[in-house]
Length: 379
Image 1 (cartoon, helix red, strand yellow):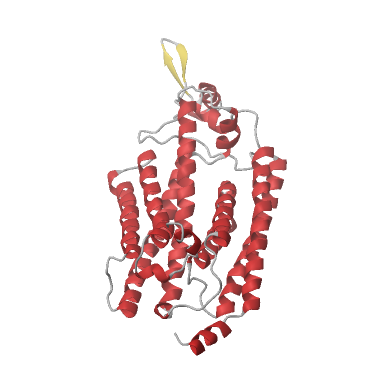
Image 2: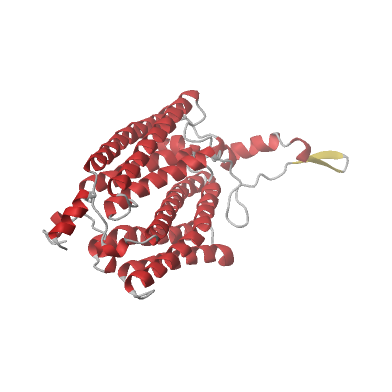
């Protein structure tokens, strides 16, 4: 690149907007931190002192109460002139291994005070989302391009999208407030990594990225990752809730923390179903993402597929999620086996997101990750 060209590129970057973007991102992190503490308060003040509806559904006492309230389901037979009351069975575990367990009352634990903190947490999350989205837009305007040219920009856009997915689910009246605390926790960790280790100054793209496919391919990859993340969190919580229900069903007594937290999550079967649905819904878009990337590779490098590390791990992720969905649909895999497979698939996506860009060289290495200092000490 000539000196004149370098000067032109530097002049094309609006430093005021770039600095404004950084300020907005830091402001969003501050508000996310407040939301994080508000979500913690929601769980603490919504805590219940004893096992609630889940325990009632899985213990003998709960079964007896459910039977007493059965009403018209109770039948009376006469044998030798003596009336015999036959109590119907309360099903707590279906033949397939799922349970007939009601969903918990939500993160606030059914208390007015917990619900108040929860609504404050959501309001703060909305504000933080608006600030972060404004930061992403300012970053884009500072260089007049899509803000997805390096890992820092990918991170801030990814976290914005993940929070956006959560807020859309809330707007659709879905009971997903239990996602708030793990979401803000991981968003803060991701943004902390972005502004320290992965930060890259606002700059122009390398020639290979000058294509409308940047808007199509990378935006769909970010959205898919955000939805896969929601599915992964749901799966992890399912594993905890399933163990909790198992302990109750076997007559065990969970600890105080499990009683106050896990009992307020949706039932394990509901979490399992939710994770499956979100993964299944976004999988076709992930398929399109890979196809779009191949078309872009054909335009940029003269070949559609070259087993570049990024291409390879995108395909491995596709195979892992395809295997998970196929097992659920045909082999009848549900529960813990399917959950482990789903988490393995998300681990593949995470390695493709971080590992390939940081530790593996390939044609996608132009996506600077801001790791010059780390590489100088052996990375």
